[in-house]
Image 1 (cartoon, rainbow, N blue to C red):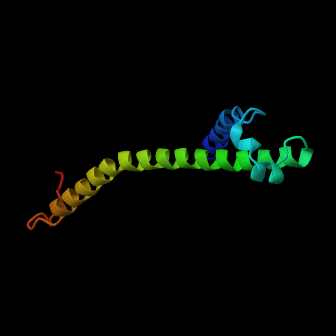
Image 2: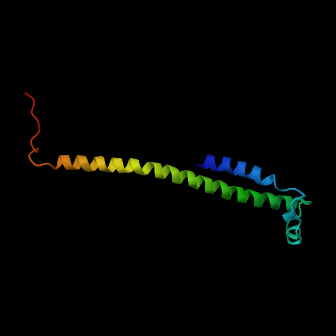
Image 3: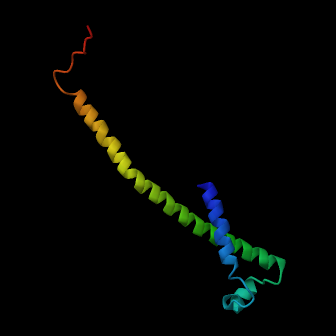
Length: 104
């Protein structure tokens, strides 16, 4: 899961970074340009940290969905195993079978 999380983070980061351009209207708003100035190294590092955090959140959500699917697929197997154990217990509890078989 860790490898999948890392790979998913890298892919989501690549997709999110495609939208960071000088022509993006959201990055040209006054309250954003005051906090994140892409013309400076500090602003670019801050934007990279924000995008990496968002990419990690997206990848975690996808990993969570994968774990959910694996768990849902395992539930029928757990029910089958549980029912076979109950059958074995019922067979072992039958009266009259307390004598072991003897070979001659």
